[in-house]
Image 1 (cartoon, rainbow, N blue to C red):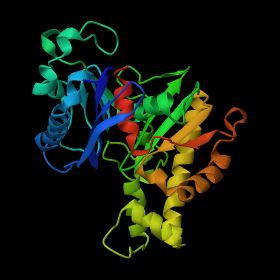
Image 2 (tube, rainbow, N blue to C red; image 1 turned 120 degrees about the horizontal axis):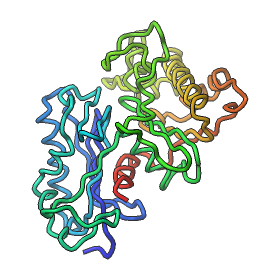
Image 3 (spheres, rainbow, N blue to C red; image 1 turned 90 degrees about the vertical axis):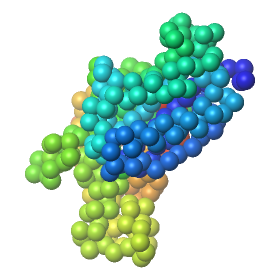
Image 4 (cartoon, rainbow, N blue to C red; image 1 turned 120 degrees about the vertical axis):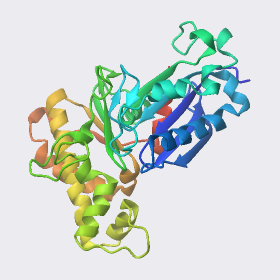
Length: 328
């Protein structure tokens, strides 16, 4: 058994559900990921979460786990322990915390009776591991502030640009999820007053313009045709890198929407750093070069000009490290 406590981390998104055991230095053990059956029933999605927990709890290190952290696509409700991910329609007000807590390996953990929780409090009654929930953007912010590109920043916005767009805020040196857990949910602020309806119920949302899904959808609508079967944002990025003007324009549009959202947030809460991660950010300068150009236009006020924009350092591990950070 490891000499130091471990945290079980689960990262739930519209494309994949990942899990790992994470130590106190943010290092991952036994990591795995499975595809999210996002168009199937809520029970089918939960079954994948249980498969992840089954595999983690089957390892010898499970005995050292002191808490379970979950970062989920949102919105989330910390009070009710529920999630309603826009990209997982089978989960609306879904009691994720209760369902995870009911997993046999979480509900009756063999070592809890002799273990304090990660926060130093007595363990939960009945041998149950405590379960902590956050939106995926908040989890990413917690990870990057703990071990990544937001280290040392007093006021930072951390963005996940992937299948959707999530974000979390660091204010006065601490991650601030807000009472419901959705503070900084930048993907669903309106950046286009006459924009298309969004599955969230609003219209013109940032996510509908800047997510990987939106980048691919716009490129296809404007006449882009991939070389093979792949029609994802990754394929659009490959075409853009080869100079395809339609693919480049799709990334430029996404960057412009991101710039508007980032500038508005900076004007509201007076940021000193912005960290951007997620699958779309792996496109590198295809995203960051137009983003810098558009920020020069939108971040016009003196106190937000020259924002320190950095690429996330933790890559695809950020959600898991952040889920573990919730348990610290």
